[in-house]
Amino acid sequence: MAVCTLSAQSLPDVKVETADGREISVRSLTGKKPLIISFWAITCKPCIQELNAINDSLDEWRELADFDVVAVSVDDVRQKSSAKAKAASMGWDFICLFDQNQTLKRAMNVSLTPQSFVVDADGNVVFSHSGYTPGSEQQLLDKVIEISKRK
Image (tube, rainbow, N blue to C red; front, side, top):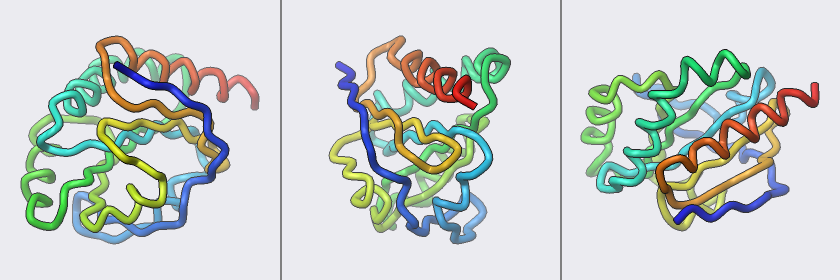
């Protein structure tokens, strides 16, 4: 079951690792366009289902709005290499980040995965939902379209 909430927080200034091993600030991803940020783990089947559903619809969605998708693995240091391999093998057209110390997860109050957020171009979290049921990814797109029209 997906649970939806509105949020008034800003994207935290936390450093995470990219797929190629560089450390970046999550806030550096803002300022250009909206983001869908999805927290996942390799042992979470609904996480993989949600990310696959988003990826399958991405070309169609990008005709409706200009945005990026950020998949954040919350797998710890022991599982990080497996998470990187999983992300690479899935063929996702996303920005993949690895939060091995779960700093971003804690800063954004993520208690379970999958949890997804829509962040506007200014870095404000405007929507979040946790859990996944087939079709619930549409709520993320609807919110991205809504905030894209405000410009």
